[in-house]
Image (cartoon, rainbow over all chains, first blue to last red; front, top):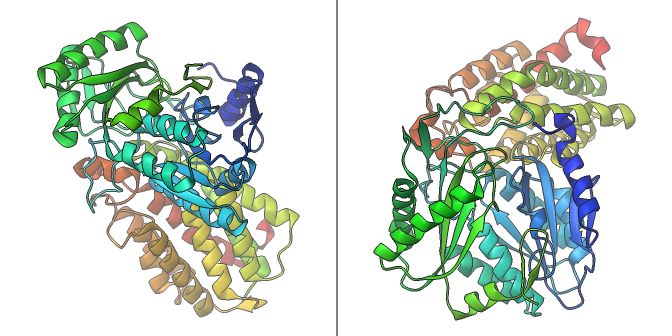
Length: 328
Length: 205
């Protein structure tokens, strides 16, 4: 591992991020990344956060057209309420703040506590939960579906609407619409090694893969002998479509888990597009790369989001962040 | 009677136990979670021990509310809010009394456990920290030793359960056969009462 000691991995990364991105205010001590021009007058603030180890999510998505601030927690551990309270205060122009929260027990509890505290300080807070992972059955027997790739779609599209000066209710509503229109499925070709543990979280022999994994090294639901890229695409896209059943065009995110080469991700994308075409699903836009990662895990996920005209327009709107930038 | 010094000893004994057992907690978490419960709890209770040394809360309840706030501010994940809520609510229920009885502590801890159940939306048998805490508070009025045994037994009894809350619930059937890391750490917290209560343990504060 390219680290000093496990205890300082997150702070070290933030110090490096500060050096690379003078357009952001990076506070390694308080674990905060904020747009330098925040608060932008009249604009709704978008605050997200979560455990570290998923980079570029979330800090890499801070900037004009996307997040106002990000709160990185310890590795795979949600941030503490103090961080979100500070972030909300830093980005609130008086127009309110939207918390974008991935559906994990810890994130939900800490963001809820933060929302209460921020409201005590006079900040209007709304919250949207991201729960797009179809590998988890959404029932009373689980903590509900995990938030994964749809987070990027929500942060981009809601961020673009906030940038246009829309009020909090509208930003919250489009964020919810994007989440409700998105589904994901992930596959691991290797386990993940956290700096704290130093050895793989689960034992996955080469020659086997794990279907339905989360982004924290949670083992998946099923293990199978290695499949080809095309077979994996068939399995993953079918799992997503079975749940989403889109009636219009979709955004496609073919996401790498961190240790899978971009060449392989593009090859996988070709297979994903083949399956979508076979199933008669039209593709509006495609993004391929490592965006919602799981440290050094090899593997990929597919996220589809059915878009209407407004969502597509907001997707295409300019964005200037470390990890996502286009337009203008 | 249990005085402020006892409650400080309870927290430092918990910090020591969590530090000692951190690797085991992380191993348990690796099997059905995300391999960080030991390091998170160690960071949190280490911070609790630090803050108790810096500030000197004057009553048992104040020791626990300060410890709870510190956990919420340093742990993150689900454990931070859940353990923080447990100690804060227990501390609030103890009020400003300078000394409390064992039945008073048992009653206050039961209120703390109820607050945890409400916050996390879990109940007995969901394979969570509650499975160690609920049987422990039932017998805590009798003795620390019985509470410790009940918590340990409760934690072990999570092995055959299927998780319905938290990250382990994603695994469905595959969560069966593993001890819940939150129940294991809760048993350490309860076990530390016995350490703090032993007359020879007085130097720990």
